[in-house]
Image (cartoon, rainbow, N blue to C red):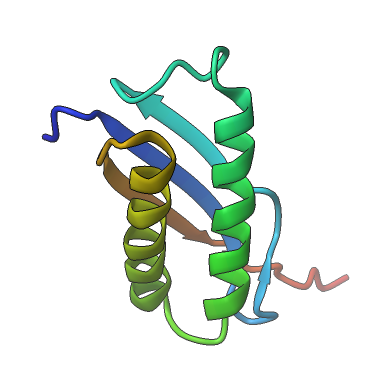
Length: 99
């Protein structure tokens, strides 16, 4: 594991409708304290949303790769650190209920 910590990004997506269902959730360990760096965490959420929206027409693997590549560069620019980035994408399907 990187000495710069880890950033876990949870994303809920409906691949059928090609939409992100909620804002990404970010958890860090050994990178920054969330309470002390809320502006950075909000920036990471916004950047992740842009990346997902730009790549939503592709597949899960492509989205994860884009998140890792683009956020690594963004984090390095903002903090000078290079944490491990672990995107977790959950495909949530809305089932129709038959009556």
